[in-house]
Image (cartoon, rainbow, N blue to C red; front, side):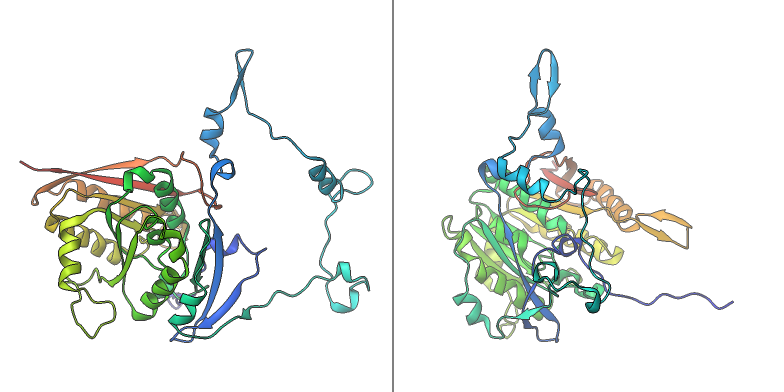
Length: 373
């Protein structure tokens, strides 16, 4: 029997899978011919913030010595909507899609529209400036969908959401700081950080990806205008030991940028970038190299999703990328040939949600530094 081989296929973020009810608008084709979509994400404030299960339990009402969860008032309108979904016996009535057009009833109310991508604009970066979103509670993010593995940075991943939630929850912790994001992808987390930080260096590799990131920052400049936060998109390759300073590169580093990075940075972020063992190794080497050169003590925040896969090698469900990340994290704590000692602490996801998504299998880690004497 010949050896079984598997070819690389496309991957799709479950962020897109869970918003199927929303119309995906294709706004352009990027330079490599991939369709680019635009999705809006609403930031929930005040009473609209979603509580986690732990928070619900902590905020429950104590009555007669027993703990009960607070109930939400159901309006008359809610009752009417619920009753409309029930049949005469009170069972939930499911409307199934006709198997073919000939089976469809004549009533227009029963016909389901076919949702197709719709091209809005095909233009340059100036178009993004004109379409800039000024709303303070909505993010407009351009992204691709169902990409090859090497282009997953062009999609939106849940790890960026949980890190964004933590930033929005602990705004005072990050207010006025200078932050560096590694593997920023679409720039989602950097845009959120810019609502409280002074400067955010949003970094990744690939001109097409960095162009997309720059467009998203332009689309959402209204979010950071009240705080004055600035996002600078730069190229930072984990496989290289030096920052790109080529003046012909659109996203190269100037001498002033490099000086500011090393003198002012106190926060480093990386959201859901641990899916390839070689890249994970390169990231931790980059973290070591950069933090050793920083003037100030720095705190690192890393988010990751535990992805389970069945492998023929072990004939079992494994979580190899996550396990490799944890090994690298443990080794990073044991480093003794530098000037810093690192301590890793998991931040439990019990803080409120400012964005709608599922937190299952997501983890957030904090690396704190102390100076070795």
